[in-house]
Length: 186
Image (cartoon, rainbow, N blue to C red; front, side):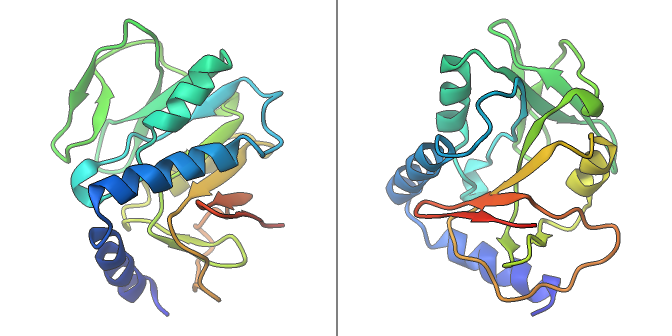
């Protein structure tokens, strides 16, 4: 299936999830993350989920990372193409941007090469680690700047598609975590 059709399908599937079920599934995903071989690492990048889009509530993952004294980095959209990345501290003031995404007003900027784990937003993914996002390319451009050792971990409520047509600009996932499974890709 092509990316445009997958975007429509998975937006519809997510819209059908109740807010109570969404939190339950988000907690299950956070608990699955505890099984990943990532806890010796220090710099974790995570997106802030958008409620109106029924995205994963990443606050549960953030709580786990805080409890393990990890450095948490969150994105800020700085242009139509690029993100900056800031350390999430107790003093970080978050504001809603024009797309209803919480992002830091200011703070300590972190360069992508320092980030060791990226929790990647997505709409769909396949058994090979290809993903479909919203189509703007923010995360592909960002992950291209990360170290080759950086782990890219998708978060999804759903099982993988058989095959998604990808391009050379698309960055593959190392893992995708769902409420019931962890998928590992080569």
